[in-house]
Length: 498
Image (tube, rainbow, N blue to C red; front, side, top):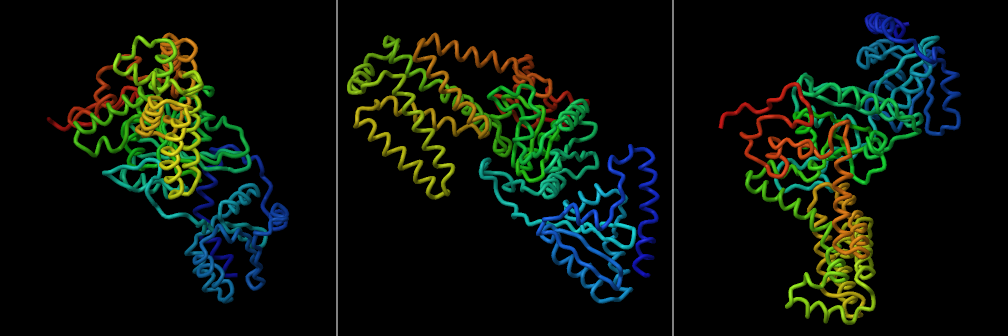
């Protein structure tokens, strides 16, 4: 029949190339040839599977309707087969270019990935018409910027890859496709720029992903927890971003990016602690303004972890540190509070965290109302009821506001949790406990690594030449070299003369 001839003509070259590839690759673990009966048996009790038979052409189709492009399915496959014209069927084969499969396991996976299995006699072919429902490209809710691009990655891996390709029009941008999850079979793409990246990071990332044996990976933030050097650390060891421009900048800097199908976040590795305090806005504004804002973030980091703890320490053990004019006000404010400063501070911090979590889970408009009104009402009521002092309200509010200055939500959440430990140490040991807590944090950070590199790079190891893009954002003409952490074989990235 014309259908058979068209298929044979279409797959002659493909079969030859596949034969050459098969000679160089290991044999399939499941060499069982695909059959219609076995395929339908695999999808038994799947009410969403579609099986259609066309006796005139001796063809059976098996596919999931919700995973296919409805227009392409109707116009280019069903209409030619229903018309009964061999000429229309031949055009269909030429247009869609099916590929032949000889493995039942491969065919099942292709159908689950949105393909249409075509059974014609003893042979099985697959039409690729995958087109799932996807949301439109929109702004990032967690990484808002004032200037610069406003598009963000989506859950569709091909869309995210296209957004990166649109910004990096280079054949040196390479993509490695991997699969994770015994049940989910989640696609993972590793991206890097050839001759810029250090290949040891690519190989190490590939090795760690291939070693993951789990039923399902649903998000990038799940994947990186399996890849962490130190899985018991509270600090994130890989940077994730929903912004294509941020990931492109990491790729150009010699880092490796990873895209997980179904997740709008893309990971970057290796990562240092100081990268979490950098924002895309820093590079789209004048360098002096960008540097000032970046320094403000580090000040906010110090405030959010220590301000409330310092209040507890001073009011519990070190009244001599309080200025005389402020001491009378503080004493009067605390005179009606029945709790020691430690309990008072923990009560207000927990309340603030409850308000923050409630505001995040509720719809946007309601969440904003809860955050603003709830904070004002509860704070004022707590002071009038004698449960807390005015000074503590200021300290807790300042710490909460400072935590929002940090661009990375994951790092901000980690820092907020550390604050509780420092408050307890300050309540039991005063300033000595606060110093011990900060020293423990520094020691822990010094021992962390990301893909085998120092987490505190470029402070430890000491590389001051990289500081011009860490604590400040120097002019672009001064940013000539790629970060030392990436160990790029191509160090120079900016040859513009000043």
